[in-house]
Amino acid sequence: MEILTPKEASELLKISEYTVLDYARKGKIPAKKIANRWRFSKDELINWFGTSVLDILVREAEQEYREGKTTRLWPSE
Image (tube, rainbow, N blue to C red; front, side):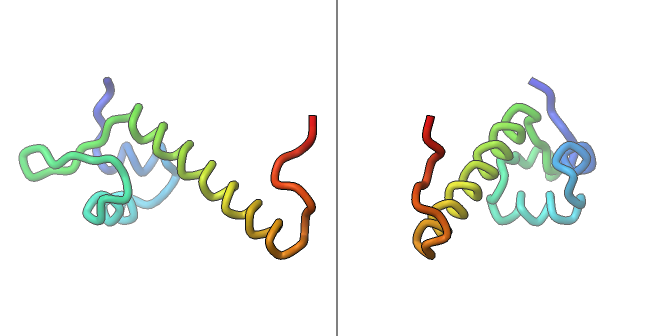
């Protein structure tokens, strides 16, 4: 398991270090405070990011369906 600093986590997620620390304080991303410093598991961040993106896409699809912009939530095979 690779442990990241806030700076490394921000580079991985392509967001500012300030945002990473803010999300950590608010419990929005998986993080642990070790010796009064925030640390992040690379695997947990990657999993969190993938889940968050999927949630956003599902919510957008549901909204478009409710607004009548599409007739189905999932593409047909």
